[in-house]
Length: 68
Image 1 (tube, helix red, strand yellow):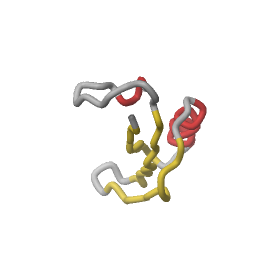
Image 2 (cartoon, one colour):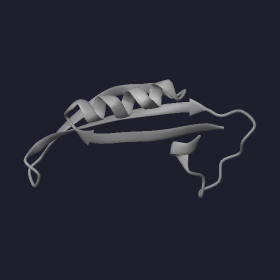
Image 3 (cartoon, rainbow, N blue to C red):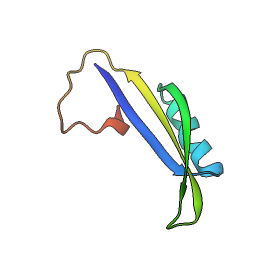
């Protein structure tokens, strides 16, 4: 099964740590990062898609993607 996640967070070190944790857990970057201004919070937000192959499992809608 191939799984997909879109990580988001503020444009700071916490977002970099979130992506680094995913990479060290077997996830791979998918595409380029994205940036957008959150006018309500008055800060930049980051996003990065990640994918991972999980052999021997089948997808179900209730699967917790972050635990794969």
